Length: 125
Ligand code: HEC
Image (tube, rainbow, N blue to C red; front, top):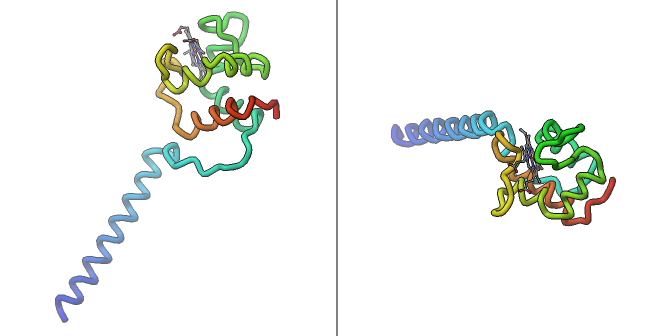
């Protein structure tokens, strides 16, 4: 009987420890590493622009964009999507400068969102 209670206590402790582990993971990664669960159609204005604004436009817009690569309008973003350098740079593909420069790589979900937009023909939606 004593052993039975010990097992219950041990089980409770293990469950508690496990749930703490998940809480911490959320804190550590800020949901950035949570798998991409968004299966809705990709939207340029609602999904792509906020990501590019956060990571790219600061250097790649205005009169003197870095590396002479202009971004920040649909036509400009589409142009680097079409020539492959948008996805090439954010996915760290060989032959492209890894972007965003000086920051950590974008999350897999953000990269997948951009890829989905490029692969679906870069709709202006
Ligand atoms: C801190 C400034 C900075 C940020 C932020 C930045 N870039 Fe760049 N980018 C540069 C500079 C400088 C160059 C030119 C030198 C080089 O290629 O490294 C460049 C070059 C590029 C090129 C041409 C590289 C090639 O190999 O063809 C592309 C495409 C590009 N950036 C896309 C992006 C994208 C997309 C983002 C956002 C995810 C981004 N950049 C964020 C500074 C930046």
